[in-house]
Length: 112
Image (tube, rainbow, N blue to C red; front, side):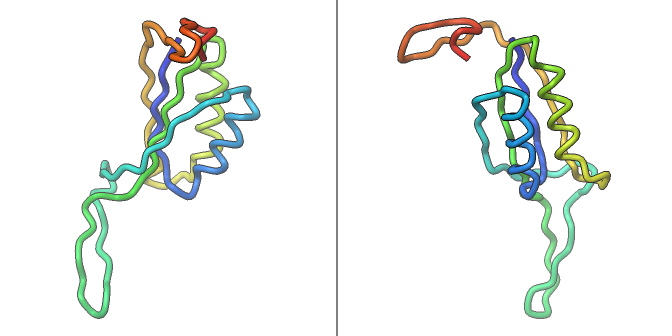
């Protein structure tokens, strides 16, 4: 099993979610996060005063998938989250040792 953590632009969330559902991925967790990478923030003007926005709002999607769905999930995220501009985000993939569904105590792929 693999855990996919994807940091994406907030307005891309619905597209990414729909693409993942089409690929058979049933569950995901999202968080509103803030950070910066190569963008290094930006400057905005409010009532004539300029101020620096250092941390850009993003959405973090967390998914745990069976190894057989990993490539499909990654491709769906890349296809739908990409704008071609700096700040599109990143995808992190890590191994998951085990999963246990609390309600039924099922473990492994059955718990997904």
